Image (cartoon, rainbow, N blue to C red; front, side, top):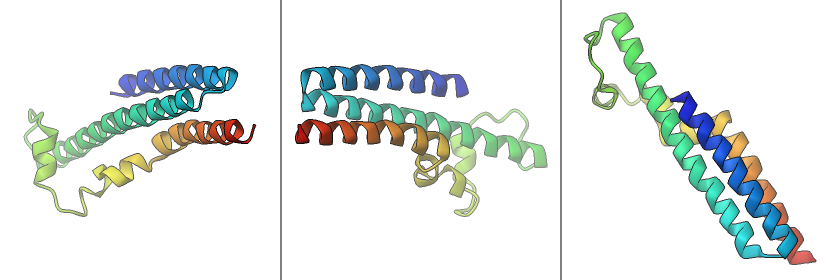
Length: 122
């Protein structure tokens, strides 16, 4: 799943950079907003992959301590049996606010906001 996350990050950077570059040269706020939307969309995809990876890590820990059958592969079902405190690492808020999602995509969105401000003030 980490490969999918890396691919999402690569595509997000490529699309956002192209959109921001075009928006800056053509003075198009709409294209800048599209670049920001693309960054937010890829952030959601990346967060989904990170959440699934965290579910499987919880499942692996359950197998390691003997709480789950070694051949159980349904992480969603296993996570549904855990307490609220044990499921905290896989909450959407924790996943989206993790450094790998927040910092990477947040910086892209900040560049988009800066571009919009620049276009507005020109």
